[in-house]
Amino acid sequence: MNYTNPDDPNHEDSPQDWLNSSLIFARTLSLILNDSEGIVVNLSGDMHFPDDPTIKKVIVFNKDEQIHVVDCEGDIEEGTYVKIFEHGLN
Image (cartoon, rainbow, N blue to C red):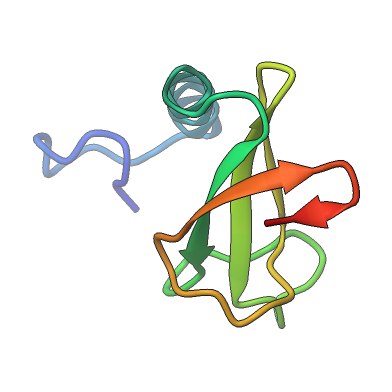
């Protein structure tokens, strides 16, 4: 598959391509989202939550300059901005 270099139709992604892209994107999100801020994301296509393919919606949020991905247990619309608090979200 070619997710990391779409301008080259002959490119085939390597694990290093995926790692580099993921790290760059995570850093970008940590610059956009303030601490404890996140976005609800629906998982579809090739996206899945590690160790639990039944999870279909996650919250991606910034905490201490690191990007975290957690299960979104509520019925919250994709793209919704959320604020993460120590005892849950609001």
